[in-house]
Image 1 (tube, rainbow over the protein chains, first blue to last red):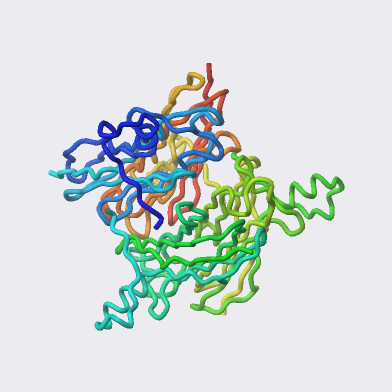
Image 2 (image 1 turned 45 degrees about the vertical axis):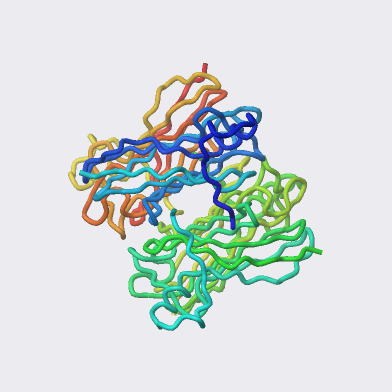
Amino acid sequence: MPKINRYVDIDQVEKEAKKDYIDRHSPFIHCEAKAKKGEMFQVTVKMGKEYTHPDDFDHYISNIRLYNRETKLTDAAFLAGVLGGQGAKGHQTVTFNIILQKNAKLVAQSYCTKHGVWESDPMEVTVE
Amino acid sequence: MPKINRYVDIDQVEKEAKKDYIDRHSPFIHCEAKAKKGEMFQVTVKMGKEYTHPDDFDHYISNIRLYNRETKLTDAAFLAGVLGGQGAKGHQTVTFNIILQKNAKLVAQSYCTKHGVWESDPMEVTVE
Amino acid sequence: MPKINRYVDIDQVEKEAKKDYIDRHSPFIHCEAKAKKGEMFQVTVKMGKEYTHPDDFDHYISNIRLYNRETKLTDAAFLAGVLGGQGAKGHQTVTFNIILQKNAKLVAQSYCTKHGVWESDPMEVTVE
Amino acid sequence: MPKINRYVDIDQVEKEAKKDYIDRHSPFIHCEAKAKKGEMFQVTVKMGKEYTHPDDFDHYISNIRLYNRETKLTDAAFLAGVLGGQGAKGHQTVTFNIILQKNAKLVAQSYCTKHGVWESDPMEVTVE
């Protein structure tokens, strides 16, 4: 409490509205599975795979943060209107650059001003 | 994942070090149990009741945020050194002012740069 | 750029609308002029003295931060609706607690989602 | 106050230490000069061109934010250690995605925990 909502494979979901609801609220981590120790490593967090989220003043994605296990790495806030404003929709997306010294387990969380906290599937990164 | 750590009544905890660990990392909500609809209502979040947390560069409380059920209300970040810096200890404390229109269930979360996310006991507020 | 707006004594301003505009957007620091070295010291930042600011989704105070000279101490974000929501108005107010080791010069900055960055008059604090 | 430090062409600066100081603290905006109206537009903000900044606990880049004229678009916080930690150095870099409806003038600000606020040169973007 607050509830942490988690992604569910939308292929297993029947109703179109629910697929949309789950997908557009879920942060997805896009990065390589392997990183080089001590070198810059790009991690993109993108909201939704197939469905876009509104960017209305009273309903938008206001935050994306990235954790490595228990450790917070980054915390990005967005103001309403950044994705086109009232009536517009989009995949809120941010690319962070981190340097890893050992294997990592990345997790992203996002916050929708109407539908709360959502957490990505974890992404294991092997560091060599 | 990241784990949400929660307060446990430290009177039930035997080891002094564990009491200290749990207490100093837990945010506690201090506010009245009743609020007047549409009027300013003070909510203080204070880290720890009996034990203080370090304010070292590599170990400090960097964040306190307040939720009403699923809705985030405020999000306060602190830089290391604000409570006296290296070698100092303190109860990180912040007082927010909110206006409630109906009954609320407040929850605070804090973040320690070494020991992750901690969540307060919820505080029910009746609005009249 | 972005412009840093600063408070102007509104007694010197003739037009009522302009008095209101300046006052409600200005953060004011409320604290003692003297602090005890190494002890908790309360600093309240309150928006406006006489005029209140809207808390509408497309027009609200989304941020208050506190500096000691060049050093950022705290950075608090607020979501729209925290002061009552659409149609409501209020003085956004937050109380931070800091520990000072030597004389300080505090400055607050706030951000209005329509009218940008505003800076308070500085507040000198003698530490004994 | 706090002072807004601004980039100065380091080719005009003689002392190596000063070139390094200015360059590593300056945010640079990297994006196209033209954007398509209503389409995703990438804006990367990277600290420094030639010199890297430490990522030590007591000295790191803790914040990068992006403005369009007076309007804040995004605000990203970084924890110490994200670029490799004690002894490591790097160009803190973040890529935001925004949608523009009309010509923009982007400006980035960053915050170094030891050397305060720095502002980028503005970047004009024509929207077609």
